[in-house]
Amino acid sequence: MLVSAKEMLTKAKEGHYAVGQFNINNLEWTKAILQTAQEMNSPVILGVSEGAGKYMCGYKTIVGMVNGMIEGLGITVPVALHLDHGSYEGALKCIEAGFSSVMFDGSHYPIEENIEKTKELVRITGELGISLEAEVGAIGGEEDGVVGSGECADPAECKMIADLGVTMLAAGIGNIHGKYPANWPGLSFETLDAIQQKTGSMPLVLHGGTGIPADMIKKAIDLGVSKINVNTECQLAFAAATRQYVEEGKDLQGKGFDPRKLLAPGVEAIKATVREKIELFGSANKA
Ligand code: 13P
Picture 1 (cartoon, protein in one colour):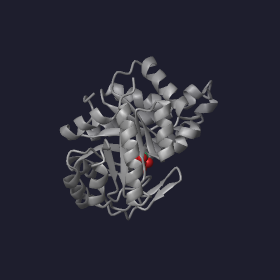
Picture 2: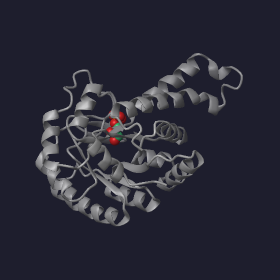
Picture 3: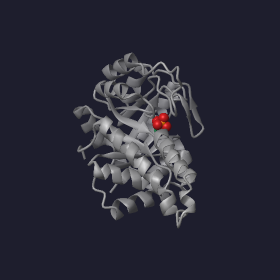
């Protein structure tokens, strides 16, 4: 059964570790992430962007696939199915389809409009026991056509949104989606510290988890980050392993063209990436 992310993130904030949100793209991705979380006895959040939602034939298809897999694979660790960077309308669609968690990304609206829309979703998700993530200060880089410039959020605005009763808050602290450029100045711990001081026990979310050095991840967790999103790193690992398989001509040997063989190295690469992140985030054995 899918669960809200509230309990797992409250425990993470109290226990000074973070739960990974790993974005899914298809059956192989979902299976690899669920199996790894189970093997490591870790809670996990499956992230779905609106673009990935369309790619996987809509939110209902995803809910059916994930619920079926939880049963079929005997998954017992807590699993939240979460809309990533959702629009207001997208969040409503996911709630209707059976997601257990949604993000409303109102960071591109003026703060008043972000507050109004977030407030309405706090009411709806609250009645249904679904967790809600809000965002202040756009995350840099590009993800599924949503482009942000990597700004640092205003801690006072973070407090305004946190006080509305959201479950977790994503705040820009210089992080960006995708690969970090060589001249990236790093996370702004000064901003993170100020946000955490204003928002208290609110679990904070770090987007753009790909390529952030381990010491920065650990420091961010110390300063109140309880959920870390990873997407690109699994894609890079999958692509590299698949490329190697084909370049070695393995698809031309025997039944190497069978998708169950062709995609296997990529799946193993996703598993290795997720395993490494769960270890780094400290959520192993916290299910
Ligand atoms: P990366 O693609 O940089 O890992 O970011 C993932 C993310 O923040 C999803 O919201």
